[in-house]
Length: 211
Image (cartoon, rainbow, N blue to C red; front, top):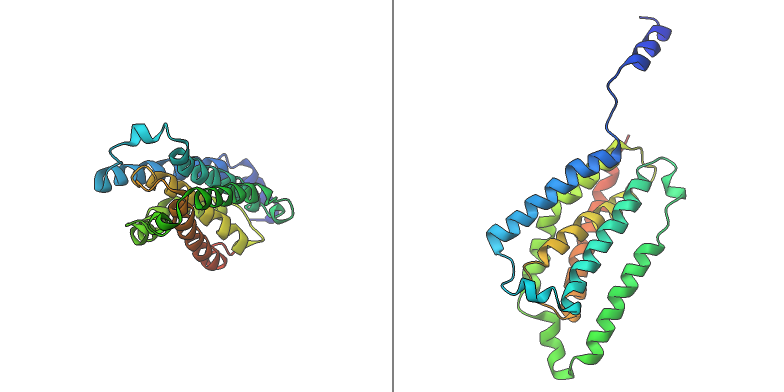
C-alpha cells in the first residue's frame, strides 16, 4: 500500500481513541466506587458518620483530601499534553497545602500541651499509613491510564500529581472510616501517606509513561 493510500485509510477510519477525560471518568469513578465499597465492607464506616458530617473539623478531612484530588486531577490532565509542562500552574496545590498547615497550627495551639502527643499519634497512625496507599492503587492506576492516553513531556511531574490525585481521593474515602478528627493527626498522617504515594508514583512514572 502506498503512503498516500495509507493516510487516506487512516483518515477515513471511524474509530477514534477515547479522550483522556473520557478515560478518566470511565476509570476513576468505578475505582472510587470499588474502594468505597471495600472500606464499607471490610472496615465499616464510622458509627457516628452522620454526626461527624456536621462537625467542621471532621468535614475538613474529606474536603481537604477531595479538593487535593480534584486540583491534582486537573493538573494531570494538563500535563498529559505535550505542551502541558509549560502551562501547568501549581498555586492551587499551594492553597490546599496552606489550608492544611493552617489547620495543623490551629490544632496545635488549641490542643492542651499534655494532650498533643495523644492527639497526634492516636492509636491508628500506622494503620493509616498502610491502608491509604493500598486504597490508592486503583485510583492512581486510573490516573496513569489517563496520562498514557496523552504524551507528557514531564513524566516524573505527571506521575507525582497522578499520585496526589489518586491518593487524595482514596484518603477522602478512608476518612469515612477513620474516627480521628484532630488535625494534628489527620494532617500529619494523611499527609505523609499521600506524599509517600505521590513520590512512588513520580519514581515509576518515567518507565510507565515513556513514549
